Image 1 (spheres, rainbow, N blue to C red):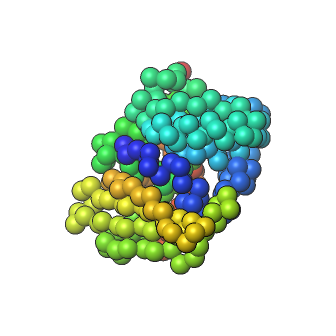
Image 2: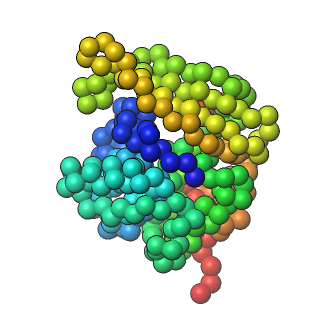
Length: 255
């Protein structure tokens, strides 16, 4: 897993306007939330700066937020305090989750924000999904969002410079992505993300981080979900769309 420690302090510039407010981020998953019992126990296992976790807690759910980055976990705790939300925060990567929680603990697990590609290759991805599946109660739901890597790879290595200034907390910045696309799917790829903040005096402060990622095809993801005991219930996958959401349920077993 990669850290996001350098980007944690400016991560809000990477969150879309429609998901910046915690209540709005949680509302974007209304269809899934309608399936959960009252006061459901929910895990956000790639919590970032906490917008989703805090939004879910605001709906009365019992929320645990984890992330591999200590800085992200700290920012989630700060946001929880700002909103007076009850969110338990734990620093843990996906494979460490079973060491912190019992099997069958959660009614829903969220792995959103295009995070799964940071798992190291197919083996690491399956291990991450296996950890999430173990923690779900039978019939519980995994909610996962992903980039459409088929599109990303087709575009090749490139530099994407934001075409507009983004304002966050009274400050302006431009977001830049630099993509390093490896020749083969199974090889390590890189994304360098830079936040170029325009300061009041006109100078520009740049914060950046080089992140490793291992892409996957949609059909590979479906097969891996089945392998760890999860059945895809709904999917928004479209080969021409930038992102998609998958909702999978824990397969009922005897016992």
